[in-house]
Amino acid sequence: MAARRRLLSGPRGDGRPILVLPGFTGSDGSTLALRRLLRARGYHVHAWRLGRNLGPTERVLTGLRERVRGLLIEHRQPLTLIGHSLGGIYSREIARSAPEAVRQVITLGSPFRRPARAVSPVAPLFQALSPLHSDRVRDADLDAMSRPLPVPLTAIFTKTDGVVPWQVCIPDSGRRTEAIEVSGSHSGLIHNPAAIAVIVDRLSLKRWQRFAERDEIAASIYVDGR
Image 1: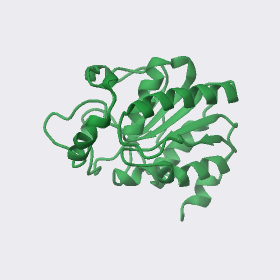
Image 2: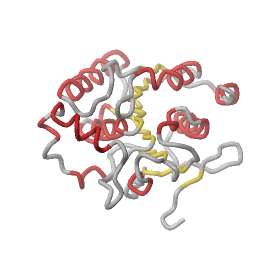
Image 3: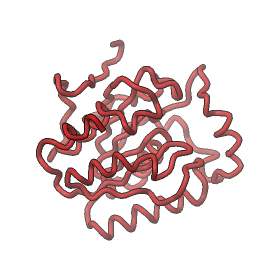
């Protein structure tokens, strides 16, 4: 709230459609503040309207496909997808399967591969809910999750995540792929002023270019080994 005035300053948005997807166990309530701020900046921002995110259930997979199709018909232009954690995985897979429907993807604390050693504290809950998950994801190619997308991708992460090991939140390098580091927690990324400032910066572009570090945004470009 303290950063809201600053985040609302600057040129207004161009009215492009944006779909925001919550993280694991999150709902549209968790993305409300971000959606309201982006809407106030001049974008057409939409909730996913699929209830609580309990994982890749058949209802979620089918519902997301229908939601994207409906928004494409409504706006007649590709969508920007913003996904927190598991919502970011959904966003990437939508872009991979239907690149013509997606303008760009922005993820917040989303894993791109399975951790080598560390176990997420939410893994037991995800496993407990796995009987609800669609058979379509049981044989998913996990290696494909890290491959570059056919659309621009900005992956925002924090080294003090606490839920997902930050190393797996770094995408493979690509022509229009970037990883941006901010300070904060995993759950807080959806409300993190620095992360939101990066989102606002990415949305302001008429043509994609890499993020430029500057004093007014507490975020840095991740480079391997830094």
